[in-house]
Image 1 (cartoon, helix red, strand yellow):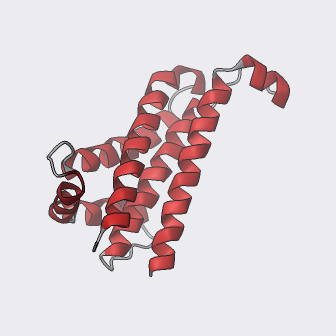
Image 2: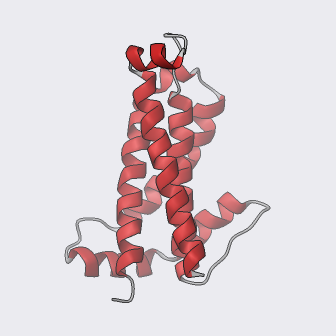
Length: 158
């Protein structure tokens, strides 16, 4: 189980790095030229999607920490619903790590909910070029989520 938890954290980090890279490429004409990408092209929708997957894999890792597995069909919905049930546990561990209430698990749950919704909304219903601000927010949310869940898992049981 520990290896699978680590795998999910690695996948989450990989998704975060990819989202950050796509955000940089979208706004940098020199990188686009070097990669032979049309200068009008952006990847902000993909930033939102990969940021969401960072959050999703983090949530899967926390669930596995508690022995909970989610699978298809409706794996994303099941993962969110199970994550929601762990709010008290997450709050307790985060409090032990940070010794303050600077971050409540409810904030992470809201991030998960908002990014799950945003993934569908901005990935399929708008042009990628119009998504710079939502992409920036998604990237910030994924970074915050990853940092806190990664710390939670590393410090759990110490």
